[in-house]
Every structure is written in C-alpha cells, then in structure tokens.
Length: 274
Image (tube, rainbow, N blue to C red):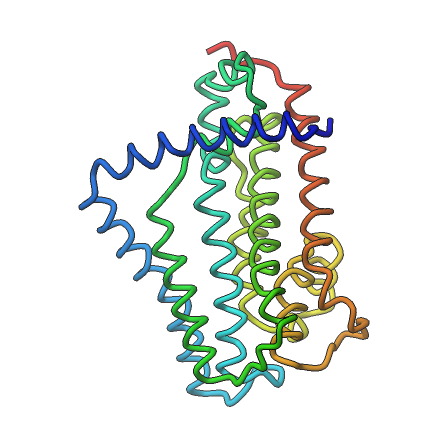
C-alpha cells in the first residue's frame, strides 16, 4: 500500500518521537556512550588499517591505487554506518518475535515497519561513521577529485542510496524471522560481507560475485559505479557509462522489493503465543 502525503507525514512524526525517546535514553549515560563510540571507532579502524597494510606490498589493486580504494572504503563505510545506526531495530527483530513483542506492535496505530525501525537507535555507531569520514578525508588528500557541481550534488545522493540499500538488507534479514523465528546469519553475508566487498573495486572479483552484487543485490551500482564517476575512471565490465548514475534507482528498486517481502511476512505472521 502506498501512503499519501498526510499518512507519510504522520508516520514520520511517529518515527521522530520514537527516535527522540531513544536518543534521550541513551544520552542519560554519556560516559558509557563516549566509550562505546571510541571502541566502535577503534574496532572498525582495523579494516582501514588492513587496506593500508595491503598497499605496502602492492602498488595497485585492479588498477586502483591506495587513495582510490580508501575513497571506496569511506563511501561504503559511511553509508553502512548510517544504515546500521538507523536500522538497528531490525537487528533485534528476532527477539521481538520470540518474546511476543511484535504482537503489541500490530495493535498500535503506526505501521509495523516504522515501529520496528525506531525500536532501537544505536548512537554509538557514530564511531564507525567518524572512522568512515576520516578514511574519506584521507582519500581526498591523496586523490585529486575534480569537484564539479554534478559531483558535489551526487555525493550525498550516493551516500543516501547506500544507506537505503543497507537498511533494505536489514529489513530482509528481519523478514526471514517471520518463518525462521530466530535471526539467520545468511543475510549477514550480504550486509557485513557486502560492505567489506564494496571497499574494493568490483571488477577484481570473480564473475559470479560481480553478477550477484550488480543484478541481485545492487551494491555495485550504489557504491562502485558512482565511485567511477567521482574518480573519473573508465567504466569496466562492458557496462554503459550511464550505470554511474543509477545509484538512487537501484537502491529504491531493491528497497521496494524488500518492502513487498516485509508486508508479505507481516500478513503471514502467527503469534508465538508467549
């Protein structure tokens, strides 16, 4: 069902209130929040350190030098950290199913999706966000990007597209819980594994991986292809140059598919009886 403007506005107001309550609750313990943020920053910094160590032994990977790969890493990490913070409610969805909390969700006037999305907001994920921004800043010091008006406008569109795509993946993981009850690690191969893969040029991977992350889970269109545009690199893999600008369309199409499956799961939900 497509919401009209009034319904969408109402849902956004509900989401804002729920998230506001979560933020106020987490900020009651500011020392704990600061320590968690620092720990999150340090843990995820290992990924960037791995890339830097790798380039001590290789001048380039698939024709991409260290600054260009750091650019990819920053783009992927920022999008994923935003999605992980905003979509944390889906990560704990299996617990809502087991405890029977989802039964209460269905009795409230707001949509189930908005309530689950706002069920948890992990502000400590800002540590990963800062680490991704730091990597992006490092890349810009090494790589000379020609920041035309088109690139300036397309950068936030690309980040938002990546965030939408990762939230859609978290939604799919939660949707499986309608049938499996417990969360499955299969989707993690495409969420956490996908963000790791997106940190490297897609053309260096085997053909089946490229097809998977282009045509089924369009991470290639959302992270890799836009990076080709920002870095002014040729489009490989026999793809047309227009694929560089398909990030929002690919993200929206994937999110719509995830939404359809989510609504299917909600309609077929049967209470655990707990």
